[in-house]
Image 1 (cartoon, helix red, strand yellow):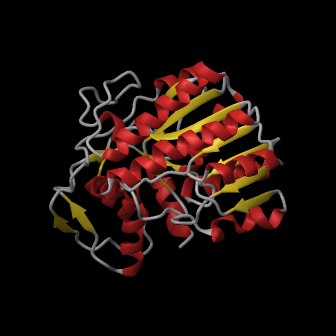
Image 2 (cartoon, rainbow, N blue to C red):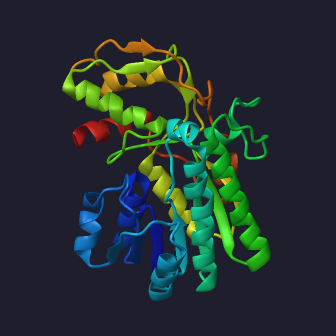
Length: 310
C-alpha cells in the first residue's frame, strides 16, 4: 500500500512512518523541515521503502505533483503549526499552515482518488476550559488560542470534503503526546524539557503553580491509533489520550520515580502563559468502543523509555 505522511519528519509523524515501513508499506514523506528533522527518518529512508519530499503543505502545485506520482491509498496528515504561544503571537501564520495547508492536502488527496485521510488534531486546545472532565468529543468547542481555532477549522474542512467529495476522513484529537524524538515546541514538549533538565542537572521552569493538568499519552499508542483508524471506516473526530489527569508537579514526581540520574532539581516557578488551559483530560470511550483502542503505555513506563534513549 502506498501512503503519504505529511509532517513525517516530525516527532509523531516519523514514528508513524517507521510503523508503516515496518509493515511493508511504501511511504512518501512530505515535510518542509522547519521543525522536523531528516535524522528522524534515517532508518525509514535507509530501508528504501520511504522517500522524503522537502515541500511546504501550502504549496498546492508541489503537492499535486507529489500525490500524482505517489498515488497514495491512505494519507496521514500530521504537518501543522503546533506552538500555542506562536499562534497567539501570529494567528495569520498559524491559520495559513493549519487551515490553508490542510485544504491543500485534502485537494491533493481528492484529486488522485485516495481512499482515506487521517487528520491529526488536538483535544485540550479545542475544548478550552471544559465543563466536563474527562471531556467527550461532543463537548462545546471553546479554544483559548488561535492554534485550537485553526485545528478546529481544519477538522471542519475534513468533514466537508467527506460530504462534498466523498473522501473518507477521520480526525484524531490527541492529548499531550510524549516520547522519543519529541521536540520542545508545544505544551507536550514539557516532558522532553524536563527529561533534559534531569539529565543535565538543570532547574526546570514550571509555568503557573504546577497544578494544571494534562492527559499525557505515549507516542506508541498514538501511532497505533493512526494505523487502526486508517483501516476502519469510522468518521468524524475521536479523542486519543490516556483518559487520566496528571498535573505538571505529578509529572515531575513520576520522572523522579523512574530516574537513574537522581532527582530533578527544584523547579523555578514562572507566571502562567496566555492561551493555556487549566485542566485537560480526554474521554476516550468512543475510541475504545469503535476502534477497540486504548492507551497501553503508562506514564512511568513511557518516561523510562525516554531516559533509556538519552
